[in-house]
Length: 139
Image (cartoon, rainbow, N blue to C red; front, side, top):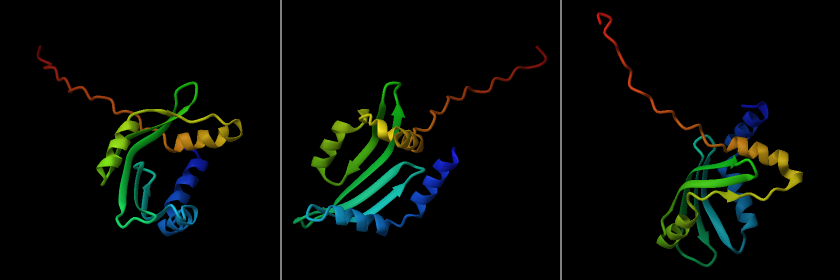
């Protein structure tokens, strides 16, 4: 892991959720209010609780096991697990789960995109462990 990547992870972990909520609510004013936010960069998990403008109830959304990868031609974003407390949103999420979405290539952001892809790369698949074979030395 590069020093730059380690620094970015450290900054993300130090950023207080209240600051993220404040900025998001400033941007989403009149659309939605972010009530709770939790992001675990190492586990690649995001939890959000929000209330749409004019609505009484809240909506909870949880994303897990998402990644950015390079398929040789472009970068792609994939979400492996997502759920919500609303059936209609679960139906919508089921349409995007497991699909690799192409990230538009913008040459001016190529370096930043490569860094983000490294930050959110999928962990290497665990190799299956073959059972240990023991052999009798007397044979």
